[in-house]
Amino acid sequence: MTIAETILSLTQKKKLHFSLLDPDKQPPRVAGHIAKTVTDAGSSAIMVGGSTLLSQQQVDETVQAIKQNSELPVILFPSGAKFLSKYADAVFFMSLLNSNNLNYVIREHVKGAMFIKHSGLEPISMGYVIVEPGMTAGRVGEADLIQRNDVQTAVGYALASQYLGMNFFYIEAGSGAPTPVPDEMIQAVKKNTSIPLLIGGGIRDAQTARQKAHAGADIIITGTAIEKDKQFKTTLSAIIEAIEGV
Image (cartoon, rainbow, N blue to C red; front, side, top):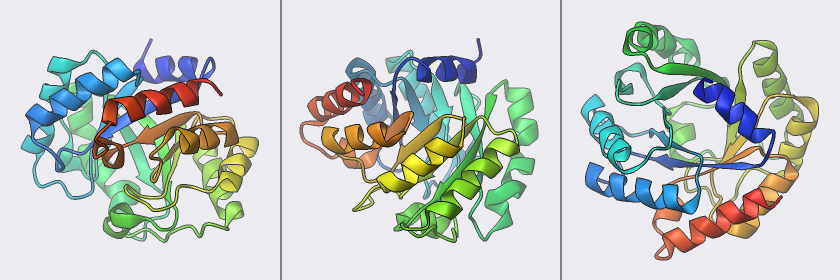
């Protein structure tokens, strides 16, 4: 089975948690330590990417450190073609659909397509949108942020992604967001689509994670906000337990 097929199969059995590691937020050695922690806590995959990366070397070294400390699939979450790494297992071949910059909608994908073909990375197609407040991801991605009460637009993007043949749909509020994606938006998207729904941004505790999973999220993503928690492993374990209990 491909990684995408494996994830799809798992989402039909339970809610999943993915950890997102930003190579710009810690050195590779620390990323490796975090990878072991999230693996032990029960994450199903590790995503690698960020909005403020400086070099491919950052990504390569981080991915290699993660692979040395975890057997979980490592999926790139790239902000551009120059941040792809041959050491990862797969890449979310995602289009930031509500960006005002065509580079994030399709042009970076064109630049990176041959690298993906020759590196052996598994491309996993995904529609991606950012809602208010958006944070750094929204600013760097030049997103026309979906307003928090604009459920209809979110559903429209999700259906468009499905009709274009994308395998997954991801809505995020931005890393470090003070408030996560609204439950009403998650419920409406889930009700009107049939592809797995990923939700991220502003999810820092088990109660919030359970709430988003109950609303309809198939996969919950947590990143740097959780890593700053002094009780990181305990908090993450509680989040994953809460998600899987829905």
